[in-house]
Length: 335
Image (cartoon, rainbow, N blue to C red; front, side, top):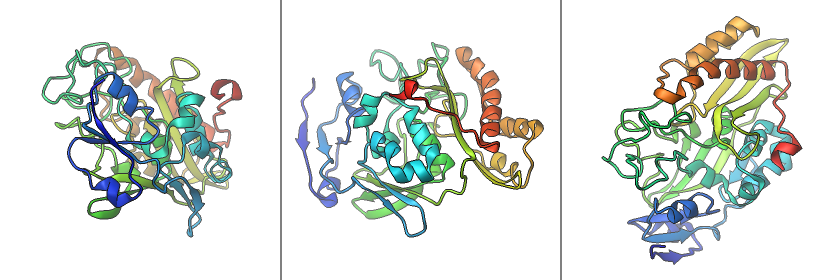
């Protein structure tokens, strides 16, 4: 274990004052693992669990305010989330294990790092972990790696389930930093790797995620979170799809779609969503949407199967949402 200093501030101003090589500690389900693996080596750890970010509350516009320190388990089980945002509850329950969901926080889930095995192994080349060393995943064991949004520098897959649902729900992220408060749409929060794969998101030094705001959700029963994975629980997505549709008289008025397991960030394509507007559900429509969502996908050796599998998963998810039969996360799978 490498030595580091530790503090537990009681105000945002105190927490954001620290500069240099620091890391914020919330649930610790990702940071502690990375420190044990010698991937993260912070000089100072700032424990933010005392800050007032533990509540879920109504918003005046009919949406919902999710505190960044509310655990994933409490979020998924909250009556207002279950009633109004079952898509989000379903996505959270599809991720990790009950033990991890009991500790992991909403803010931490947003900021978790990739589970690429080359990233987790300090002996391997990884531009995300050690800039300029290369990407050992390229041409390596990369069946689970991304096929969308990749670059020559990185093909690591974005790991979160919760964030895929947040992208489909068009959530807003609230931030507090040395320069005050600001908000950003969740679809703009995470970064493509490009030439700077070590930059996972748009957070500036000293900034903290304080809350997630959800707009009113008009989907009713016409939603689903469909996740294909190697085993039924405690596994990351090979392909996942979050869908919400606004339906009227059997016709799709508009739709929202986000892909997980496929991209280097939650993958949304507005042009694909636009194809759904004022359309009747059909196999040809959903095939066109899938094709548009996957435009530009590039495989690297072992992950070619993702490109073949994804259209079928997307079409199935769209049908589940259209007929109002969302994918069930059964008690056996999640508890």
